[in-house]
Image: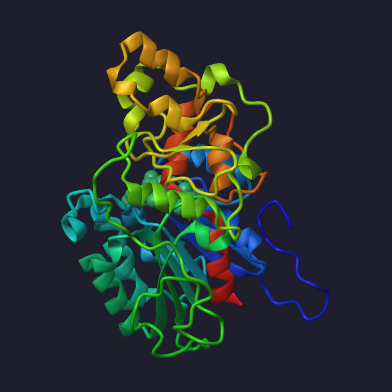
Length: 386
Ligand SMILES: C[S@@+](CC[C@H](N)C(=O)[O-])C[C@H]1O[C@@H](n2cnc3c(N)ncnc32)[C@H](O)[C@@H]1O
């Protein structure tokens, strides 16, 4: 493969590579997925307004034209000049997150996406394929309704899928909404979009799933230790015993500088009870969000690196101890953050992915948290494009 991401095709009558527009390109999760999906394709333009993300994107894809401007400021003619075959996009998800205000189409951050929908019927030639990624919650939004309406009007067939990296054997939860669409000239099962699939569609049979994914659950008290219910503990145990999912240790760096990544005493004392703690032999971790390393609750798992200390023993009766004793006990676990490289590994980024040296640690976590699982998207692209 060349530096531009163009896959070299086998000798014989050559099919020109698909011309791909990557909107909301961030650090290039879609581009990496495209490169690994096995279909000859070239990103002819990537668009994003975030300067840090663009710096990282340009470092990894120096030859790809990167438009550092807002999508709604780009004219139809500029897009049409690109002769686009494929649109890949992950619009901002804050207007749709379950815990957010859910301002949906009235949120300013949805404006550019509505502009894309407005442009869709006027793109010439019409893109043959579209892939969109967003958070769980998007499926019940007005923005999603506007999207499927535009697709119907423009003659696309589509499938909606909700999957997590656990379905490709990666020990990380990141349940996301995907929509894959083909223009009617392409062969795609017509009535395939009646319901949201909770697994990868099997190529030939729409609505048939390859394997099931994690089920949503609502924990019920009482808590055991560490503010965890018996049900939560049971679920984690089950996840850790699922041999179809790899172990966390396969995604770790060999020599991590503990001084840089150990949780500071303040964090340990204040938040120990709500940390999601995993060991290298575990087969699970929670979703890494853009606040990882800055905030604690629900932003991503931390790693228990000491092989000797037992979690249960450390947490049992902890509340009754003095601050000094609590800290001493907690420190025996040697809890550390995952490094950005390890987070990238768990998000399916290839080893060729690199951060430029000048990007600070918190920014690295932030852009990764905004990105996507490359292996999951690559698999969806195989289904869509081949
Ligand atoms: C969910 S992230 C997409 C991340 C990307 N797929 C990746 O792999 O990193 C959304 C991105 O949209 C960008 N963005 C938001 N509004 C935009 C706009 N109006 N025009 C261009 N980019 C925008 C943000 O800077 C952010 O990088």
